[in-house]
Image (tube, rainbow, N blue to C red; front, side, top):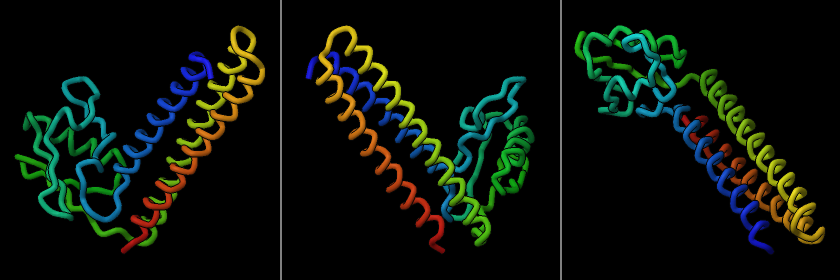
Length: 187
């Protein structure tokens, strides 16, 4: 395999790795029973006229498995942080004591568990679409190389390798989804 072909393969592999990392990050935000600071990832707070991630406005911690504590860097932003958590529609009701926010993480109902499994599957499907788009881009690169520098046989070999890579990552996504779904459905 030529350097150009290897470069296309390496680039596709790196992009697919990033897709898996993104999916893992998404899965961390989907709660599976116990409290985690990652549950608040993606919450955007109106902070002095700018919309910023909650991590940039407060320290987030979990003193126990059923509680998240949000300590703002600036106490005057407490109301905005609480409003952002409510607006994020995570099913949380933050308690404001003037110093910090306490978020009691309720046990999951069967209906909520099924909703979270649907969210997990949707995130997984989005990741699969991303993997397939990377495959399409890599195959297009292989066809371009065939016109310019590599032989038709090498192009076919490269496309086969790209397909093997795609299959490997799709399988990995399915395994991750299965694990996360089991985790969510376990009472």
